[in-house]
Image: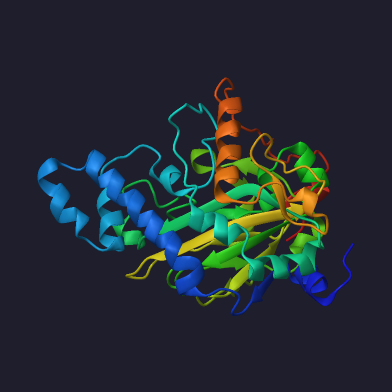
Length: 328
């Protein structure tokens, strides 16, 4: 139930930009340092031996540009706190670091989220980091990849399972590590369609979830969600949004975390869903990085025998009132 002014604004607009929540050096730079360490490991594993020493002396951006051309399978997986959706293996890699744990539990972020969801908050395992190179530098075929290229029109609730789609009050916290502009691929949204609830979606490029008839949105009036480093952007679970391609000469780096009201399904079972804030300290069972990492390892063990680590059926309503073509 929406009660306070922030909740009302989020429901009315589908988004909120909250200024000066984070400190780059304290909160964000440690994650970039850990990403660069992962790059160094990949360089040593996949680069030609004669190139290794030289490439290890590159800066962050040059290193990533280099490894993105090495045809490493599912490169984005190494920088994301998620398991592969299908065919999870014992050696499946994912990005789980002390620095990211600190960000998920950041007091300033949780203070903002509390104003939306209330005092009982759980971390939701739908989490991503996105390293978007300039579009002209992308390997062929990557332009439509949602993590490295442009992201299609969608609603975040669509990537939860059917129980999560119906029952979970979730908020997305989108965090820029670099200034985000129209030119370098900021997110865009449209006004107030989130009030219509969850709409029909289809499977797009490489299985990415996107709104059915999403091309209808291209000619609508867009709101450009530009933000500075330190700001966070909140998205309602039914907010219709996408991101533009990066047509600048620089990188656009971001992370998106999600939180849900405690006691509700995460929509991504069996991936870790745990309390990050509660009046009852007994609920705060996951209190450090090692315990969090252990949850991911246990989740991985559960997922190995399955074809799919988690399933989310695409929202498809027979009732045409939930189709975008009848709303725009």
